[in-house]
Length: 312
Image (cartoon, rainbow, N blue to C red; front, side, top):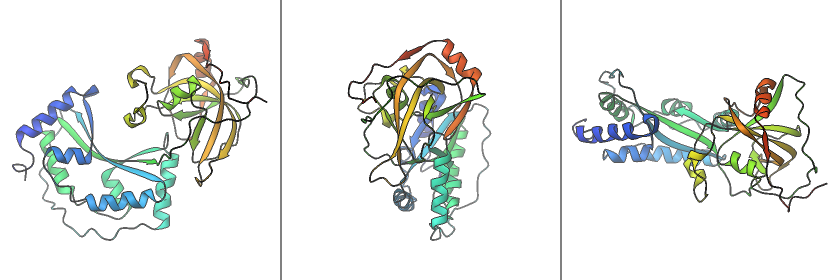
């Protein structure tokens, strides 16, 4: 098998690509990975079925290969498993599908990374590519490259407006620093940056926001290149994995025609001149006041006012 698919020159070329990648980590779609070796992905039909099933409940699934340089990596033993056992019809019951939705909703920034094996097992399916994946893993390990297959699950993003018109107070809400923590929300780039620029005042989530008032803006560590397409923003100039500013939530409305999707109405964005590195969490999470004071001590910048935002 390795002589046919995983020739030394192809494996070496991919190992060199990993070495040239930032932090010696390379992310490829599973389709692009197999294409490099001239391998037919026999799981394509099943993947297509899963994508369709998940799409029907508003969840997008992307199959990826992650490669990283690990010089002292132990080479896996040769597997005798052919991976040819019956695949089965799979379990797509309401309970199983709802578990997926709940897991994505609870993940940081509503983006869930699953080991491919766990993903298949959740639906009671076997992976037709398991034997080839094991062989690819072994061949790359000989070159000090660790290979894993993951499935990335997110809520499907509809073509929704970034800006909306709504009533907002003339002045920012006071920030209460007398308690122990301040609430925060982790937001992917470039959305966090656009919010701080005043170019995005709607943030869409699957859970209703009940408490109005100040909210810390945390820039997620997640980098999704697709979100930057068509935008004059360079990811290398933006901050990731840090508290970057503050905004007021002044309203929350359910999006028309999007059952279970809510738009948080944001006003008075204030940027921290010195971002504070911080790990985000799922949904609304709490940040110690000491961290907030440190961010405020560095100074804040107000975004330009939007003339088309109504004030009450």
